Structure formats: structure tokens, C-alpha cells
Image 1 (tube, rainbow, N blue to C red):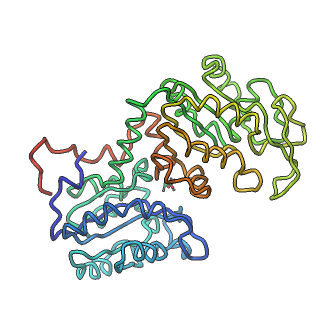
Image 2: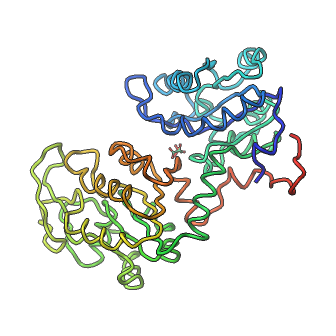
Image 3: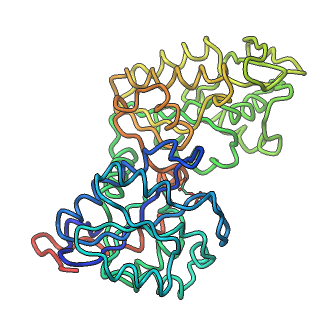
Length: 397
Ligand code: 3PG
């Protein structure tokens, strides 16, 4: 794909689609991973004399202005990280936005208001895409986390302006592409999270390409049920049991499930809990984490891995002490002598909270996007970008 390195941006206004869909707490950015991840592209453009107009969605405001979802806190954090002012606009498009951007000089940065305040964004409305395109001379997509959405700022604008991939988008595609095409073997994946039904496609694909697959979290309960275990009051998907049963037979010992689990009767911080083997889950209890024998068995197998990809928590990690399995996995992966790639909001949060992020080879900014890519789907935001120019001839934008 054409890269921002192929563009001449001097004196141009560059519209950069970023994924600043970050958690907020008390009007401040609670985790700035995604903002930091966009800095290389922003700096690259500023250093080359571009005026940078950033845009992003935040949450799912459904085409209306929702005060708590304004991008102002993102602008403030970005100012601190960049060490220069960021003009935070209170509208997405329109004459007032155009007027204020008229004055934006090379080296200056502006941030449009939350794209999803406008109903045209998720609808990929041509008029809205055209209004966005009018704001700039060039378009750069650096929003890997949103590349699976065929929205106006991801697809429509790219069709209306000279377009290229930003440095973050390029890096994500390279790392996740390598994972599928030439992983260092043995290649293992660890999947967790609530629902098997959300991840059917990716599990199928991973069972084909991986040397082993580990499944934890509530989605493992559905597989335990398919193995014939009673899962008590645990979260699971009865309608998926028949669908997943063939995997158990086909994958054999390449598919690892919990052998013991932490159960509780009340999902509250500090609630009494105990560890039971998976064939003794009491009818009144629910599974909230993997047990120590499970962790030990999984670590034994993963120790020999060349590559490990991890997506999704192993338990209800937001309720202490049911975070233990998930945190233990994060720490184990950090120390592992393998290529480690972590994607998805919750697993990335676990990696941050255990303080091991800098010992993971690649912490992906994409949740749904990384899974769709691994499943083999083409991401609309990537498909729409033009191919890289032939070697030697940089095509000016
Ligand atoms: C994400 O957080 O995965 C991306 O920002 C996409 O958000 P969405 O699922 O609301 O489109």
C-alpha cells in the first residue's frame, strides 16, 4: 500500500484518521496507548512541513452530540505528548470548521470533533465524506483499530483524496501479516473473552494455521459443556455447543482447555471463591477464572513456542481477585523467549496494568480489526488505499 513515506506533504493540509477511541475517567484520558501509537505519524508529517488535521471516533454516540464523548480530553493529552498546542474543534465539518482550519499553518495541529456525532460517519454518507475531504489536500489512514469499519472517515474520504497508510497502520499490517504468513514455529494462540460466537471465524482459521490453540475465559465454558461437563451458572452459549463439538475431535491435543477453574457464587470483589476441577463445577457456582493447574499446564506447553498471539481475558479480570489468571498470563508472556503479540482492549489493559507492555514484542492497537485480519478478512480501510508506487518512483500526492 502507498505509505506516507511516498508522499510529498510540504505545505499541504493532511487529514489523518486516527483511532483515539480511548477510555476516559473523570474527563481525562485513562489509557493513552492509542494516542502514543499515533505520534510517529503525526511527527513525521509535522517535521516535513504539513499542517495536520486529526480525526477520530470515540465510543458509539450514534449520530448525536454526547457531551461526555467530546474529544477535548484527547486534545489535551495529545498537547502534552507532542509538546505543542492542538486546536480542538467543537464540530466535525461545516463552514465554521473550514474557517478555523483556514488559519492552520504548516507545523500546526488541529483535532476535529468526534466523527460519530455526525450520522454520516457510520453510514459512509457520500456528502459527509465529501465535506471531510474538503478540509484537506491529502488523506492518511493511521487508524488500524477502525480499519474494519467501512465508515466515511475510513473509506469514503480515501476515495476522494490522494490517500496513504500511516506508520502505525503499516506496522500493524506487517506484524499481523507475518504472524499468518511466516510465524516462527511452533505458533500458538491464546484466546479468551466472553463469547465463542464472536470468534467462530478466527478460531477456525487459527486451528488451521496454529500449532496449538489455548482457550480460556467464558468462551471456554461453552467448550467445556461440549466436552460434557456441567458448568453451573457460568456464562456460556448453549446454542453454540453443537457447533464447537467437532473442533474438540479434530484438534485433539492441539486445543487446550482449562482443567481446573476458580468458581464463586457471587460476582463481587473479594467474594468467597474456590478452585475445582472442571468435572466438579457445582450447580450453584459460576466460573470466573482459570485455576493454578490449568496455568501450569498451559505454561508447560507454551514454553516451547516460537510465537504466541493472545486476545481476550481468561476470567472476569475486572473483578478482583478473578484477575489472577489473566495477569499471570501477561507476566508469563513477557518473560517468554518467543515472538509475543497481544491484541484486544482487555488483554492490552492487562498487559498495561501488570507493567509488562515493553516486554511484549507487539501490543496491537486493534481489537476487532486484529481478529478480522487474522481471520483472513480484507479490512475495508486497507483495501481502499492505493498500492505502493513502483520502486524508485515516488508519486507526489
Ligand atoms: C475499537 O475500539 O476496537 C475501535 O476503536 C473500533 O470501535 P467500534 O467497535 O466502536 O467501531
